[in-house]
Amino acid sequence: MPPYSDFRSDTVTRPTEKMRKAMAEAAVGDDVLGDDPTVQKLESLAAGIMGKEAALFCPSGTMANSIAVKMWTNALEEVIVEERSHIYNLESTHLTFISGVTPRPVRSTRGVMDPDDVLANIRKPNVHTPRTSLICLENTHNIWGGAVVPLDNFEAIRRLADTHGLKVHLDGARLFNASQASGVPVKEYSRCVDSLMFCLSKGLSAPAGSMLVADRERIEFGRRLRKALGGGMRQVGVLAAPGLIALTEMVDRLKEDHARAKALARGIAGLPGIVLDPATVETDIIIFGFEHPDLPVPAMLGRLKDKGILALAVGGGIRMVTHKDVGDEDVDRAVKAFREILG
Ligand SMILES: *Cc1c(COP(=O)(O)O)cnc(C)c1O
Image (cartoon, rainbow, N blue to C red):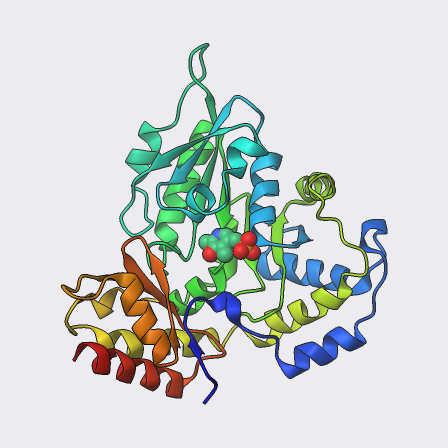
């Protein structure tokens, strides 16, 4: 057993042996000059999987989202975001910093915004108010504990966007988790949006990188924006090579992460202090309230760490994520640790 079972995030996944070998052997060129064959292969594979014309390999999901907002908006405009979304809460305010737009947060139920609430927040421009130009969706929804946003909500938001001349961007950092959990192909979500980004670096286990996907013309503009933001990389086929393996070999196994998250949730729900309905755990993320008379959250995390379990504090509660590098034995170890501390 390694010293720690690391449940802090699915971003801690290490590349597989096969990925490391592919990195060592990758055919490369200068990608800023358009010469890297491995990046080109990854970009066309990603576009094909999502049923769109083109894709752009980005260093991070945050940069891909930043480029997406910038490519669909102008200064003085407003973007509708879900109030707990990653793009609004956890990306260091690039909407204002890079795009010069204001976010307009809309409440939701587990990441699902009521189309009537979205409609009520679409603003008609006049001299006093910004024009709404973009709606951002997120699936799975990170802060809502990996909740899956259903396809019919995507379809309803798409209809609304079309009626009002708006674009829709999907933060699909974990779109493959949503698809594995719901059985809805990623292309179905993709067809409802103008652009989407997904991460190779989370449950799919590549060391770095996210893909931005849209029509060809918009992605060519995105390529210029990526350069402007300092995201043009040279022989980056060494990072695209594990991305190819992530997309071709690591998607189906996400189901195992979901099963383990559910097992972990069932194992700890009901222990003193833990506020968690295991039925709400749909994918790899578990977020639960922790209200214990003698143990504040930081103290609880310290006790868990003493027993080899790493977890994260989030908004008064605790977050744990399952992934490739935590197996059944790590889940058992975590359940045992919680029972020893709280039982
Ligand atoms: C991780 C994440 C991102 C950003 O990806 P980074 O590569 O960490 O910048 C965006 N959206 C969601 C929902 C995420 O979970």
